[in-house]
Length: 256
Image 1 (cartoon, rainbow, N blue to C red):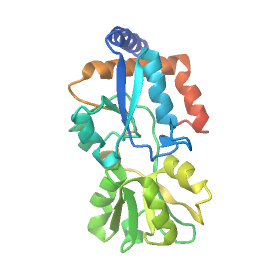
Image 2: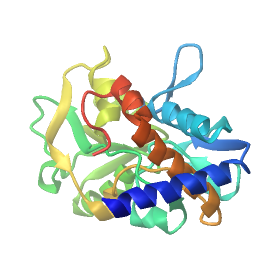
Image 3: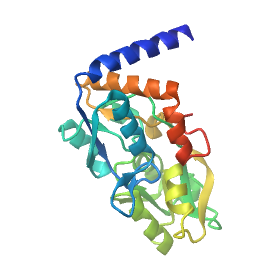
Image 4: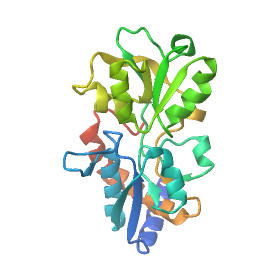
């Protein structure tokens, strides 16, 4: 416990010092993953990640600027310095670690398969062989399906974003979709679009492909920004800001 407190104090001290040199943090985001990031009817960015990012900027006393970018091109855009960090429900996994650094964990959200309630489908290669599974391009779910299911006869259909998956699911052009559970629950299953679909089977787990939770993606040559963001997150947990934001969106502990 003493080591944790000391680490937190040092992180906060570092963040405070670095914040003096920061004036703006530019976040890249793909607003097609409600409740984490989406647009309201007025075209404004809303969601859990948006609130977290704005709170981080408030904690560091800097301005937040948001850049909308398709998820499958968001890491190249980060590395090209079109913005400073990715705050868009990005899962930490080994492949992404080769190209970007990550902040401390933001939260966890399980991966689930969606299909018709009476389909009998399960998230296994035996059940899905010959079936069409929709995924969002550039997502960890796409990487998982390609590596774990496609070699065994499962047909993968990739879409520019998750919102485009649901119409094809409803029409029957695909049989199922593997996606983030919270995104699917609030963005589809609890909406009028849902015509008899549900989560089927157990949570899909694979630490190597599906990752270790959600974090902010950063360039490896920008450790000062990572330290500042981590310090802000630590303070938000300490002062209750994180919990207050999370309770607006989730009835469960999204952090763990």
